[in-house]
Length: 597
Image (cartoon, rainbow, N blue to C red; front, side):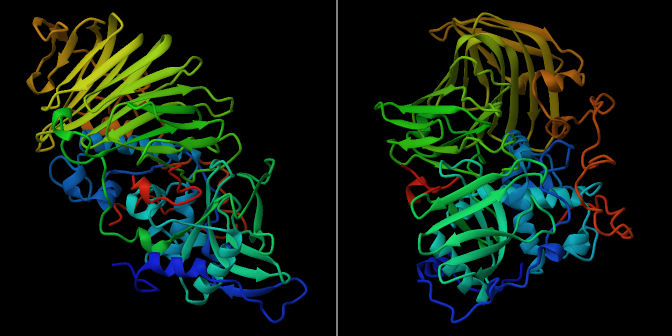
């Protein structure tokens, strides 16, 4: 178990901390006096490399981390292997694919948290290749890359998100002073007033400059080994901070006051759980048995304007950075993955909806980071749409039984529908062009589809309860805008058989499609990553066809800064992978970034 510095209820403790009123310190030096100090120092306890995205092909989450987060019984199809890995279910593999893609905006949360975990000695840096945090290398160290991804991903878990406490600038100073005196560890997230540009840092000291002015000293993983500070005026109750992903990039000013709700404290203890709530785990439940039970999460990778309308005409809107919500029990979650003004800094929030019927309209927002994919997740089912073209609006009709994509003009569609049902796990991947595509699932996990008349490429993975998988591919499967095509992979062996049904459910005919060979080009066609496919590739059909750089290498010339300042240090040059390291209730949100309107 992890060692705790402070026992008891972290939620109660932090609630008491932020309720404190700031008291004057008798004296302070001309340049300020440290009035609270954890002893953490960025040059020793922070990472020497800079916050990074996915541009150099890092290893992010693997099945080992998925087991750590949710438990093997929830995410594995078949037994856990000796190395701690397993065959993931189709929804778990789809969820992991989405989360890993989201880290392209940066790994700030993981770096901020893991630096504290090492500082608290809950984990030992030597297990990842060096005696101290500052000596760790990122390149050729997939074990460390995976660990950073693990702590990053926990921010979206219910248990962690509910522990977030929105504070005013004055409350932040008072709370941190008391917390540091007790050795209580927290991370700090801050945002622009509209909730965008989320960034996570590690606060470690408070310096008083005058009766009303304070600096909160932070380890900002965008600036390795530097002392950085957030300026606080407790009398005006305001804060400001300049940050950028690279010192050569233009800085971006963050600022707020007591009304913006843009400062969030997250206790480190909230991440020390045996397992976390999994919204998509378990078997898919048909619409007639779900009623209004359960929740649906909707997230975008990138920026877009979002308008969601329920059956009563009530709306949740996130348009041009302004959030308004009239749908009961709906809410949004903002994540921290800011690296630069144009890279991930304006990612739309995740929306949490009660199970029901909705129309979601997406339109392009004027930005340098347009939305590239969207994901819906509910029990036993994860649906992703990638390679989005929002040059014209995209409408998505959702109900507990089906999802319909409707565009203003015919366009390419790449859709993945992953489902678990009755011990079987299927992933349906469809690529083609059209203006309408409708997908629905039967209780056994079979998928029915209809769409603009034409031919679509189809790739399906099938996994049984023992973890045995098959991959089926055909480049030309017919869909029609009248009736439905039914796919039942449990019955497939050496061909792909599709049943066609009329609108009234009458069976029309069956058509058999010859299986075609797999190739590396299919990764781009269906927008699949290598980890996802390898999870199901029992026959190693793609092993010789990747043509991709190995994960975790980061190349030889990356500017991660891990060799700067100590050219003689060679102990970090060979610390590569060492093997496995062993959604929320929106109605509980109360202010600022934890807002439900």
